[in-house]
Image 1 (cartoon, rainbow, N blue to C red):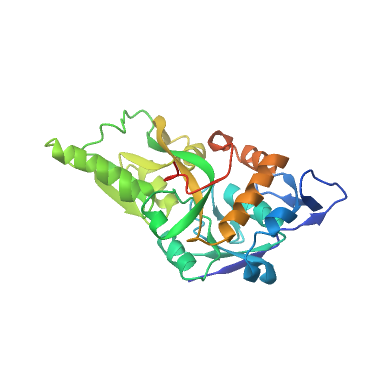
Image 2: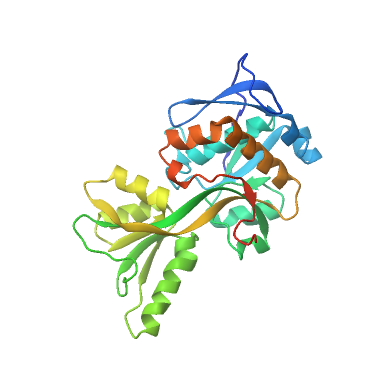
Length: 296
C-alpha cells in the first residue's frame, strides 16, 4: 500500500542571512539530532519547472527500509540522512516535501510516469538506469560485506557461500551475479544469493546464521553492524565505490534546480552538517553533478 507523508521543509524562520543568492533564512531539524541553517536560494528556485514551483511541493518516492539512509521512525514517518538532505534541499527551493513510500523497484517507473517528481532512495547511478532517468549525484558509496563474528569471509572469494542481500539493489542485480558467474566459469560452486524485500531481513538472516555473509552499500552495512555488533562484523574493506543519484525524469529542468540547491547546501555547510550528524561523511563529494556514472 502506498502511504503519503507531508513533511514541511521550512521549519523555523530565523533572522540570520546566509551568503550567496539566499534569502528567508531557515532552520531545519534533522533526524541526526541537530539542526541545519538553510535558506531559499533564488537562483535555484528560478530553475524549477513551473508546475513544481506552482505546487509548492516536491513529491518524493522513497523505500524507507534502508537504515540509516532512509527508514521509518516509531510513528511510521520516513527518517534518515537522505530524508534530512531531501528536506533541506527542498527548503532551498522554497518547497515542502511529500514522501510517497514504495517498493524500491517501483520508484523509477513512478518517476518516469509522473507520479513522483523525484526518487530519493540510495539509487546507484549507472548506465542502465540512465536509460530511464537522469541522476543528480550527491554522495558516493562503496560495497561493504559483513560476516558473523569470528568468521573469515573474503568478498573476492565467496564461491559456494550463501550471501544475504536486499532485492533490486545493485548488490543483488549486478555485484553478486557477476561474482557468481566468475565462480562457475572457474568450475567452482556458484554463490547462493539469499534475497529479501527489506534490508533488515537480510541483516537478521546473517545474524541468525542463515547466511554466511551479507552485501550492501557501505553506510548500510556499517550501520547494521553497529546495531548488532554482538553478532556480526565487517568483512574486509568497502570496494567498488559508485555515485548515489536522485532520480529525475530524463531531460527535466528539475535536475538543474536540484543540482543548484544541493550545491548551495555544500557552499553554506548544511550538506556537511547533515552527513556528519549521521556519521556518513566519508562518502561526501566535493561537487554536485548530473549523471556522473557516464560523464566524461
